[in-house]
Length: 259
Image 1 (spheres, rainbow, N blue to C red):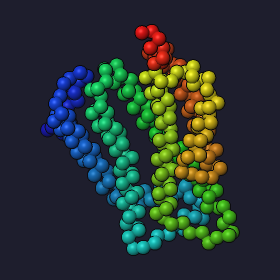
Image 2: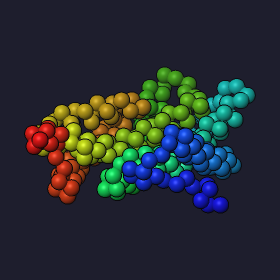
Image 3: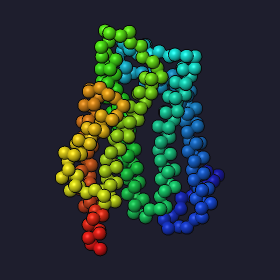
Image 4: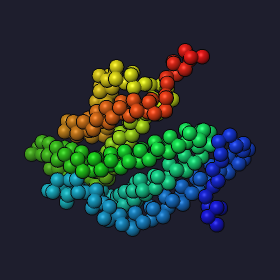
């Protein structure tokens, strides 16, 4: 029974027809859906606690100011929050299905390296989510909800708030994947640790611009987001040095010169 549920991963170089590839893809899509549906049902059952958890970054005097407009907005808020939580919880399963479908196109050594990348990416994403929730959102919401508050009768619309919080957490979690992107470019020879060190100032500028593009717009959260991005960029440089020494990675230009 278990073998029927879990699609067999093809080995590197193993031939398969187009119909077999499409059948495997359909199987993995069904498995992903089967993972999301119960996760959504469980999240919806506990959506009240989840919403209370998402309200905590608000200042204490703002938690009771969330406003809904229209008769269906409370229900749509519950559905939206539950769906986001379901996708976040099942993300490892979804990534594993994508990886299982693409892995046969890569050598066994590359598969082992990417498996480490996936584990590292999962840890970075979790760290980014925690950083956004514990550090960035409380400071950002304190600044934004208190800005010129004497000029306005401030009421926070619940749907806008949950969208803002969700997008901020997701965006910062994805921003923490930056070392994976850099290491992947180093691994395939597009970048090198020497190039990264030589253009460190340009890299710092790119990190600042990237932080500006994140959903939060206030200077407080911008500073809080820029600091870890700069630290991750510096970490990427030293990890690139280690990768080049460990696996003998060379750039594409060097490979061409050798041939």
